[in-house]
Image (cartoon, rainbow, N blue to C red):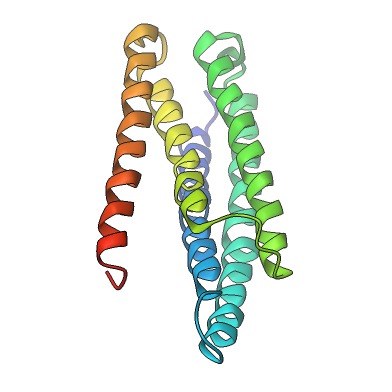
Length: 183
């Protein structure tokens, strides 16, 4: 194991956390931006302008750099620990990382549309979209922590339960919001 392994691992983890922070928060800003379109002038324009600035700063100053740096440190870890590449849990983890990048890139497309005042998605859709990163986070965390002791059946059932709980939570929150729009 390389002399700098723990430093590289810590940096990888820090940038994964900040990447996820960006991925968790950007859809919330999208929701607020979409819902701002229902406001009267000048509130609509003021909110839209401010939410565009906030989104741009989050996306380009935190989220993208964190994605790039977490990837660089991950590759560095694989150079230090090349045996990981031969392990099944790492193959599955890398599959989830590919899904995470697909999610990130699709979110980037949504970001660009909203920056151009193109509103193709509802705030309800964005609430569901917001859970994509959560599902990947759970999967990758359990894979990394449990590695070869991971029970695939238990893990699959756990992921399905998580997805169902997220859907249930979103629906319950929508009912609550419909009853109390100012909440």
